[in-house]
Length: 278
Image (cartoon, rainbow, N blue to C red):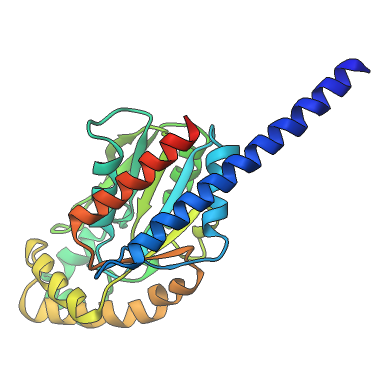
């Protein structure tokens, strides 16, 4: 009887301390977001009502679980820049067990045969082929790998060549970590979004996206009519598949934000959490 009472008593105080800690985290994060709003280019454009509370609860009550963050946005919106600069703020030197990144670009299906048969990108696009629909991404394998990482299992992600369209199944070994960041056009697609703990959308104006996209297309072997045809398709498929996920995201990130500011605000959030939870 005494043991039952002591356990109940412990749970009560433990729960109370958790709630006090959660409240402190919520207040602190709200303060940082208010400071961010005053910037000419704030990082956070919109945050769901329960987003901060959910983050605080996970930090306090699920500290031993893997935290999976899904980041989406249109092609050339700045997803990769956001992820890479967030990581740079998280760790000054790469250490295993802190973070793992899964990039959807690695999960494109092999379409080298289609490209060879068409003879060129121009000819391939004229057949109506699209690289910008969920069907050309192996989302089922990607989801399988994300679940495995959350279950503390090591995976081998494929590697895709954007020039030859070859998918190599023996890509890169990815180990489980405290935080798993995954980014890509369709990480908030209905087939895969249910495994995400946090859903992020990177918003960037279309004229900026277009300029960035064409610069990147050159490095991937697409110029002239081939680039024009694909960008037209990119815009159409974004309207159908990507922009609607804006509505279900936990937070909207500004794709126009300076790289250094991403590091600064991420570092500020992490330091504040570290001080509260130490």
